[in-house]
Length: 355
Picture 1 (cartoon, helix red, strand yellow):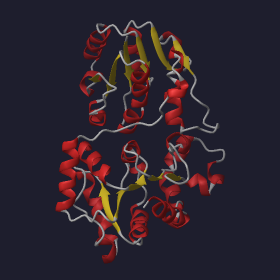
Picture 2 (picture 1 turned 60 degrees about the vertical axis):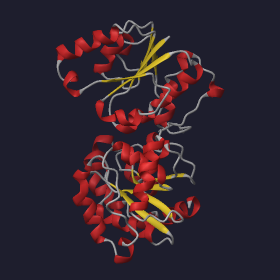
Picture 3 (picture 1 turned 180 degrees about the vertical axis):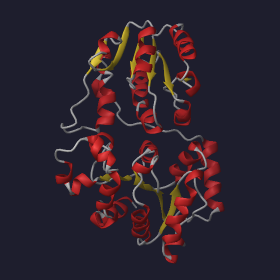
Picture 4 (picture 1 turned 90 degrees about the vertical axis):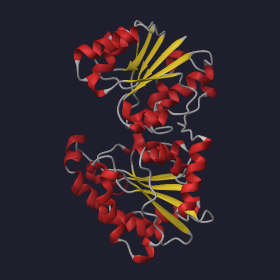
């Protein structure tokens, strides 16, 4: 049996959807399972033996109709038996439809019966999620295949090679990281401005973390974000700066994964870093943007190992009778209301409980 799983979009989405591949391979060990995604997310798939082939869909192919249809017919030639389209947009609707697979699974929209043999309705966001709807809705796509539910594993996983681990341990030694102390990664900045907790507030978070004894702090940021990272660092007290190893950070996706694997826990903005940390089985404290639906991405929330905060937790009245577009438009002013003082005690509990 040949199975194709399609998940475009960001790192967190691509990583989360690997649970589909993991569970398929677990129950169909002889099946060939291929995974299609954008090229910028390939590194989170390295080492996953539940995926037989990764099929990148480059940006230049997507933006050219001739190239896209050439790509579609190349996919058709692979003769898949099952296609699971997690992304569920027109681009992947067409890819799925033209594969010729007997079983084509996707999410229900008013027009999708044209493309899929199985159209599944996502869980209502007003319901209570089991693992977080980002997980629940992906596991939903496995239902037509009648897998043994008792064997379902909902946890995404990342894999670090022995070489990566060895190199990172050497890097920690070079930066004089005391491994007897708790090493805390702080995800300073979101993937976009509207997913980034205000810098002056994040400085306070760093100070809260540094107030704990025997901690070492690492910052997660990209080269392109270094000025914002420096702004936060320079705003910290001298005592806090002494606990920060500013120059020890992941310069690419794989180096971040390897560094995170050697950390004890993560605190910071919702995004790929948090999702990767969870896939490494690290405790995570997540700060959500006001316009992000917490019940979707607050995965494996247990009030202990995985904790998150959202303005709606403290001011639900602000989210009554207001649509998503309006919330997103006003994210800056709403973020200002999510002051660090509101959840300082939660951060303190999280660090104490997971150190």
